[in-house]
Amino acid sequence: MDFLASLRAASRWRDALVDPARRERTVLVSLALYILLWAVYGTIAKSSQGLHPDMTEVIAWSRDFSLGQLKHPPFAAWLVQLWFTVFPIAGWSYYLLAMLMPAAALWIVWRMSADYLDADKRIVGLALLTFVPFFNFHALKFNVNTVLLPLWAATTWFFLQSLRTRGKSWAILAGIAAAAAILGKYWSIFLLAGLGLAVLFDKRRTAYFRSAAPWITIAAGLIALTPHLYWLVQTDFESFSYAMIVHGDKPLAATLVAALGYVAGAFGYTVVPVVLVCAVVRPGVKTLSDMVWPQEPERRLVAAAFWGPLLLPAIAAVAGGAEITSLWSMPAFSLLPVMLLSSPAVTTRAIDTRRILLGAAMLPIVMLVVAPLITIAAQRAGPAPASAQASLLAGEVERLWHQSTPQPLRFIGGDEDLAYGVTAYAVDRPRALTGMPEHAKRELAQSGFVWLCFAEDGVCRSHGIARSGPGAKLVETQIVRNFLRFAGKPQRYTIYVVLPQP
Image (cartoon, rainbow, N blue to C red; front, side, top):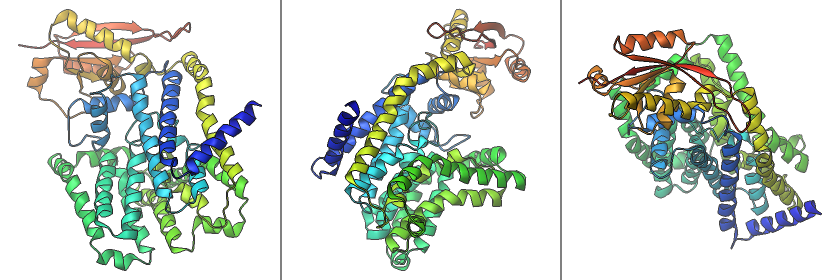
């Protein structure tokens, strides 16, 4: 009876999404609930683990407005800086921000798919994307990859509209969105290259390049990127250097393996939507071929815009000797619903729509139910101390600091994950020294700083001794973070306190 009631609720949901008078409001309400359910899940399931270092690192970047960062362009830091001027730094608020990214992408997919899918297929396509871990589980870890979800979707939508209509408004939006994607992560160059190649597969390419649309797009993008380009020149392109040092100059065998792993992993993440569509449609070879590379021009343009940004990184990685990972394919699937469902040979029934909607609704609810078990399991396994103990360590660091000086704590250095975690939680809102531009020695001497290490990390300790000097206060402390009735694992830390000099 409960299942029948759920199916009836899914039927009413489907009817509201099909109804032109109600569907836009219904989609927005559905996505708001999607954000809420997954944010609550993240808050509970990760409550014993603390904020991931990727998330505290972005907080550290956001402490001072900048046109760029040593590792990545600045869009994620700008967004976090804006968000935490309104909300407190806490797990629940950060997971809300994190889930806004996939929800915004899903809304864009909904609007974009209207040009290619009928009402039921639009609903099914949107629901199918919620089974891709990029749009929930991975999205909860906010970083420079997750911010690309809506930025790539928006760029793709605006570009396709600009190519079809050659309207100035769409061209301007495409340029601004493309610039925002680059400001999110330089990886977005593959999106722009893929979309550029897609034009070459389209019969309208001559008319498009003879119109003002592409040049307006390029001009709008360059104008939006100008401040960051200026920063890159001023810093001698140091964020490019970081990418090449960390990921480049790899042996051919390693890059081949990584590229194959990237492609296999990317498709692995989409296995649930693909299997569901195949189970419902049972496509033959001809239909599968039409889904992968359609002959109809409008759909072939979509296919080119899908395959290019997804596969170009693998080719470029092998050619350039770089290692890539399938997680970086995260923003490349906004056109997946159109790829799977737009073929005329693919038909969906109302009952199929209701069942897939029901499955999509049940996933976050089931995960919410098991969230307490996940956080207990993580606690018993022993979460990473840099994340789980960061708030307690921040309290201890500030206690030691303010015992010795009334001045606010301005700088935290040492182990990268420890520095970012304490920077995020400390009341004084200090700046991180690690992974950031060097501060002048005079400024550090006048402000003082704290250097943090795991007690067993000899390299970090030696750097702390070298940087802090003979007058530093050295403290060894042990922190244990218990959760509910489950004991945590103790971790020892070495803290160097360098007080301000007059």
